[in-house]
Length: 608
Image (cartoon, rainbow, N blue to C red; front, top):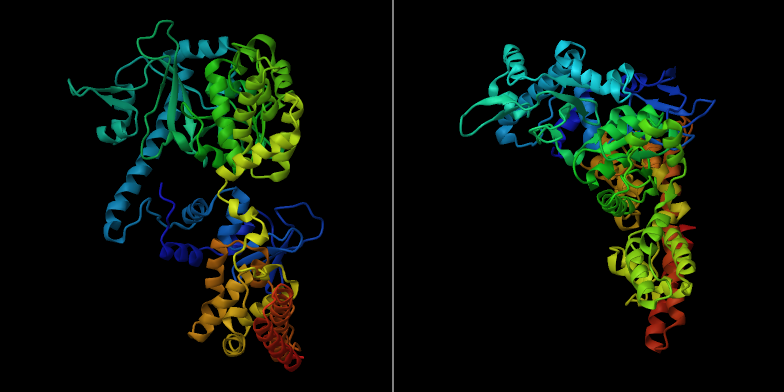
């Protein structure tokens, strides 16, 4: 699925969606003048501090500082990225979003989307059919298999488990009667065509069926398990990848686990459907599983929407350990707090649940160890720690993983533990870790010493200057409500004096729009800027203008803010020149600097 959504479609969504309607579908809003107030949906509070502006189509909470537009709200509330938020809103207001946009081929893309909708319908119909069959004569062997494993009717219903009958064309005939073509059925992955005989037959036959959901809750595929002791096919058969099913983007049972993940504060990652179901049966309803043979970056990013803490609960065999190590590497890159559930050898969650009960399984989860302890235990098992070569190999392997951790504090903490465990001086481990980190990190230059700066100039981050920041916020607010302010700023405030902060970017945009005769579009354009640069101060400026009362002297406020910004830049430049003066010995160059400083001091007196 392409993440690109054309600007005209975004604008259409914004035009059709009223922010008060969208937000009121989640929380009750109370009219307050020309705005609405409510208890914030993003943090606990007793006094409403959440404000919605219908005029600006923005919201802002003065308690937790979250704010933005309709897209930002959906992103925060549903834990999704911008493209997904746009799709959620589009579905609510009946707007079509093509998967891959090309204006010249718009009709072709409409056909593609129509095809996808057919695939969703096929999966929904067949899932219900499989569920019905499980409780009929055709499915009695499948139902017996599930009951024998202790899977009760409520669990069957929760996970929509079904049964594919022992027939070659039942699924095909049902869908054809629903007016789906043979090509649709094959494309959905529910039928297979034999290229030699040209015969088309059902993919799933005489099997337990587990529906696979997208993170939005649509059924997009199936996984199946045979009930035969000596099956002619594989023990498990899964749907192939289709236009609506990409294994690398799917986590089994995520729609069922979302609330559990939020409530418990972490996700549990298992290996497959049966293990995930066993965990849910044990009360661990925050459990999910990768759909496929390996965990992927895309799956880690999906989990990150809901939590930054994960428990990996893979099998304790060689394949499971290798899968755990690969998952650790991915989770480290995305800054997760990682724990490992240490299961007994040759056991998995399902076997533990069935043999020992849920209390034992929950106990293993509660005793999960930090991933670093897991790595150390694995690396030192049956090793001679008195050997310098063995120590070197162990340290090298672990340091390689630690070097991917972005936090200096966390890296240093693990380095201390590693040094203690291997009986090596901590500074040696830190030196090796720093070398490995600098090699791997794309941000190495940020950690270079200031004296490496070739020009020896003083670099000032204007975003950290509170006087400039406050002045720019005031000017932005005034530019939004008064169409004359932008023109004043264009004449009296040099563009190079406006900071590179988000508010500075917004102020520049407001000035540009005003000068170009588009002042009326400022709110819309700044709302677009919020999509690209979510910022609480910008959302506050867009949502609230109560600071500017009728008696407020706007002209004087503009003058004061311009003067404050110029004075701060004057001070910064003067300080930098004085600092540079200390290191210069050349008389001529010193004289030039004194001239510059004198000029700046005169400008300062004029401003004052």
